[in-house]
Length: 78
Image: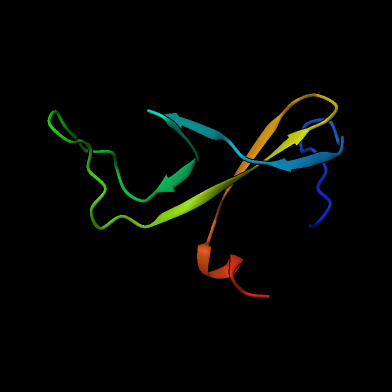
C-alpha cells in the first residue's frame, strides 16, 4: 500500500472502504458509470453499466475522506 497524505491538512491517511447495508447483508460500495435511471418496480437500472469498487482513505488528523473508484482489472495485476 502506498502512503498517502491528506490534501487538506497533510496528515496521514488510512485505507478503508464505505459500507452499504442491505436487507440482511453488508457490501462494499461500488461506483457505476452513467446517469442513474430508476424503475418503480425494480429500483436502480444496472444493465450494461461498468462497476468499480470504491476504495476510501480517511485522514487520521482531520477526518477528511477521499474516495477512488478502483479498476477491477488493475487490482488483479501483481
